[in-house]
Image (cartoon, rainbow, N blue to C red; front, side, top):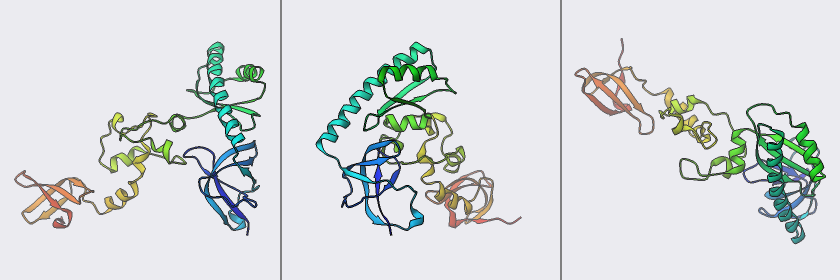
Length: 267
């Protein structure tokens, strides 16, 4: 069976499989790997392990070496150059009058490619900009348009909960989020209450959604006619978390019961 090691290239990004070769790698070690775009700097996230052939996405590229002091110097140099390149690109975007916002810039580890990430409301014809940048930096230029959620993941920040954004700290991939998730959890539908820094619905709405879906199946909906120890009434509100229901009695008094203390009224 082939052996693979899990490598991550950026914080909270996907983990990719590589051939560890003869390297006995430990979780947390920094390594240089061979990719389709050349050499890249990554971090070991899972130790080498045997896997079935059908679980491998070919071609399985190799881990070249553990990171050296010289590699770390190159990485720091690339990061400094990328920041300078981002500032140059921002000026050139204004020069060409393009409606785009440069989010980040990144040099490939071997310096053979310079990638600019940007956001824009629609499609942007940046061909002239690419030619201008290539003439300035004398390397292969790539511009990648990203969405607002990807922008938040790159930049990071503190969410409404007071913690670092989930997308920037541990979420490797985005999942679809819908307003139905907020409704199922009886949350306020005020956009400012259920939106993240990116302006889209908060990723955390999905965390407990399956639990709420399961609980809702056995929940009394508002308007349900029920019988209680104090007589007949109608459900006004149900609280999934504590398993209680508020019932409006025939005398218009509202009483809170545990869900198992009421029964559905027939007829």
